[in-house]
Length: 473
Image 1 (spheres, rainbow, N blue to C red):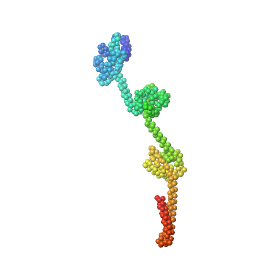
Image 2: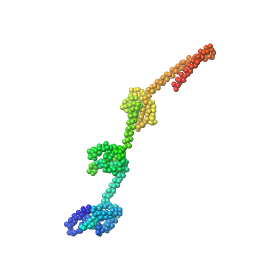
Image 3: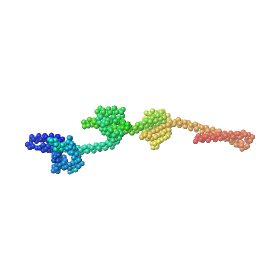
Image 4: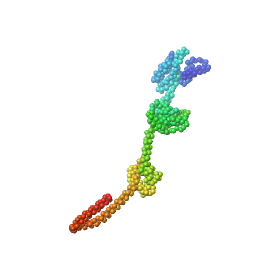
């Protein structure tokens, strides 16, 4: 910067000598040249302690010429109190360590309380005897730049706060798959510290070794525009502890101003528990499906409209229909036409009570009547109702046959008991008469034997009648 000013001063001196008969000193020429540029230029004479600067410097620092006495102490008064020690240190280093140009950023606070940020540099100048004679430098107002930086920092801090507050893993990968950014959630999920991951190859660290080469090649193809990237996919990663976790990823390509791909922004959610739950649920579903399919008990599932939605092979065998045929039917189509209304009433009670057991007549495809016991449960899954059947047709037939036989036995027993009892009653009457008239004296032994046999026969008939009553009960 100072070299540029010297070039301007040299050009200005050459121009002035050609166009103006008056001559100016080198210092005057430098002053005139520096007034033409939009930034502050100053010089500090080490011998006199006098500071000179151009008009831009007054404007830059917000002071009037009459208010500045050109001393170092007056200059320090303009500077923000917190930055004054830094100015002193830079001046000290510039004098005692003169091998390089010194740079500094400081603040000034004007009368309107507005703070300006100034960036300056300092260089030590020597005379022909190589003796240090003055310090010179340039100052620029970087308030707008500083405010922009502060605003960017606020936005960056806000973004980092957001990134660190979300539960999703957020990563940014460079074109070579090295990790440029990973948030706290990502560190928590993977078990690594951020410092251990930055600039490391994502695939080398997190991809299972058997899938690493393929996954890295697919990534590079996307980066090079040779393949279409997936906005969503699920992929397994290996954590620091060696645990495998399933992550659901959403990706977005990052572009520079020239619209070239420079990396990938990805957000990931740990769905390991969800995937494991789904696997367990699928295993349970398969187990219950196997039970359903292989059960010897006929099972049927219908919806709220009484349409069959699933039936097992045992139900098909019992009813004589194929599975495809039953899935096109309604519940009432297996009953008698005159039973449809009562079937609907049973259905209403079933929905209200949630559970129902009973006996019902169904008809096979060939018209054969079945008598079945059923056990039904409503809403065993949302909108679905379950029913299991047990064919008791043979049992009911056997019961009816047994009842018929019992009825015949009762009839026989009744007839026999009454038919036999009539002549027996006559015999008992005669014996009673003979006993009352004492006509049995000469045949006493025979009379007693006949009397005993008649009583035994009477008791047998009574026992038959009692057993007949027990069958009726």
